[in-house]
Amino acid sequence: MEGTVFAPCLEGMKHVKSEDGEMLTKPFLDVCKLILPVIDKFGAAMVLVKTDIGGNISRLEAKYLSNTMEFNHLYSMVRAEVQANTAKGSSSCTNGLLWLTRAMDFLLELFRNLLEHPDWTMSQACTDSYNKTLKKFHGWLASSSFTLAMKLAPDRTKFMDVIGGGGDINADIEKFCSTFAPLLEENHKFLDGVGMDSLKAS
Image (cartoon, rainbow, N blue to C red; front, side, top):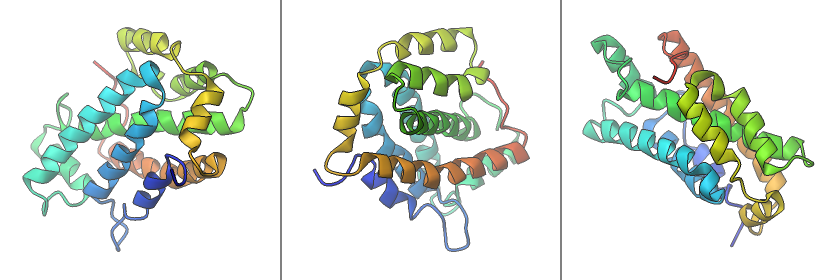
């Protein structure tokens, strides 16, 4: 296998913005999809996260496919829902984008932890990331299931070997974090601008 599991994501991120700097729907969702195989390597610990991410990608993709011209830009879906007053609905695309971005925040933080804390176990890295990103938005139930799932985290060394493939895993994680973080930040800024960034899980 050439390169690490991050190689396809890193390639995909080059195409996320239009020439005039707008976030494009399909390329952004494609990058999120390319992260799913990375999550697979966590096994049972990440089943919840993967299901959540997959569901939100499908929701946004369905909307995009309903009118690829109108929804070519990622934020156009949100703007349409804000205008129609449907953005706060639990099955809205706005909600989908919000939770997709938060799940990606969690993964980003997790990979950052693996990079910066070589002595941490996988469980420690997962729990710390969860506390920094998703926990404040989760209710008790989601929080408990998450905490339980983190106990199933795989052995760190084996995991790093598996995702490393034939490439330099630390360099790719570094690149992934530094390239993806500004995109997620932009999503938050936009969602914050329409008053949607602080919604909590019901």
